[in-house]
Length: 95
Image (cartoon, rainbow, N blue to C red; front, side, top):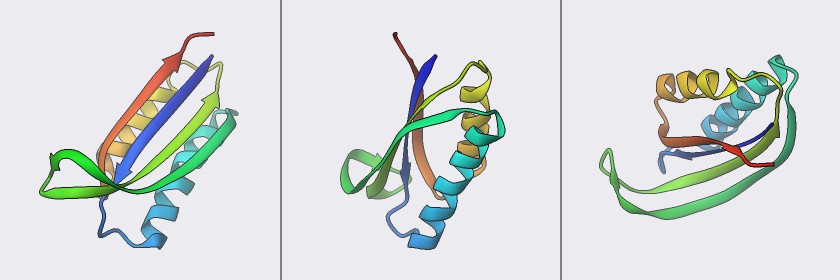
């Protein structure tokens, strides 16, 4: 099954923090032998509405393929525990 995850990082997060979050996401995926199909840094964008008093954020997109069905739950748990992550969404794609 193919999935995609998008997450938004606070605009005041350093490049090192952003890289660390992306590294952790890829680590969670590789831990379950998941193939990363594509990864994109969409850069700093204006948010449609304020999130936690932030008007901008850094957007990241990762598309991956996995046979393990609990990957979205593991990613969700990581995002919730990661303070610099403002919002996130993980979806299963139709084949």
